[in-house]
Image (cartoon, rainbow, N blue to C red; front, side):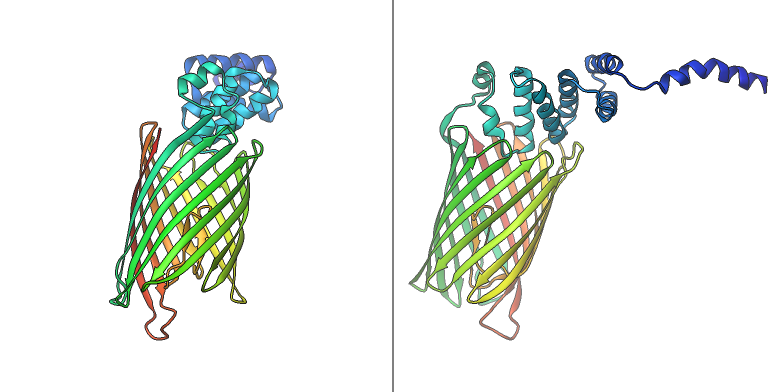
Length: 381
């Protein structure tokens, strides 16, 4: 019994010290020691406790930001560097690593942050104010089905992105689609122009025009789509409201909706997005729901799964890049995508999608399945 009392007496100073309230001097010196030794787990735990107790400084935020960055949690790193910037707007180290964190997290504000990079860093990274050909991308898609009256579908796209200053970006794409339905060829050349303007580190406005030169059995059914949207991205959260109007010789379709997302803490960078859209066409209304989840599987591989429910007739998505105006609309869609980054400039994309299609002109056996296989490349110049 006495031995336990003596042991408790000897450990009392240690226990008392461990329960001491954290102060600025201890948090600053200990976090610097962890930073120097590369003990990132201990550093993150310590500084999260310090910030919770309102013990804060520019250097502590920089250390926390680097700890999250080096362990692959880029959204958390961006948040910490944004906090560090509040202490000192002119700090070049903060500006540089805030840009890196935003770039790796896919933030919409990356180009705006590039404007504040130190000149030497911008030169080293090859960041330019104006870049007429910033990125080139290609895509090829093949859709197969289980019905004898519809052939396989083929689609390809070629696009060019341009940077017009640090706030404006322009994307142009040419696409082509074709399918034989009841022995008659349907083909559709397309042209898209998308303009984005970054209003602030939080808000971005976008507008697009998409022309669809549809032709079925040598009869033209041209379509024109206009799109506008406003998006906001703040820390882990994103929100967007957009609307589009598609006019063809067959119908006029108004689409409007809202979508929101969140990026969860952790090096997997798990993100979730939900969207709901209302479709107004021919005096009728229908609703479309969409769910998306993605994560970083390894250092260079990302995966994403999606689910869409509703009648997708004349539905457009990805800033109106894709317009689903085929004769047979999808009424259910699910799929997954993989993106693999080959260094800083080249990425490879793959996608598989399962659709349940509906033949609207038939009331008997009017449902069939469709399987979609896509591949693509993105090359940043």
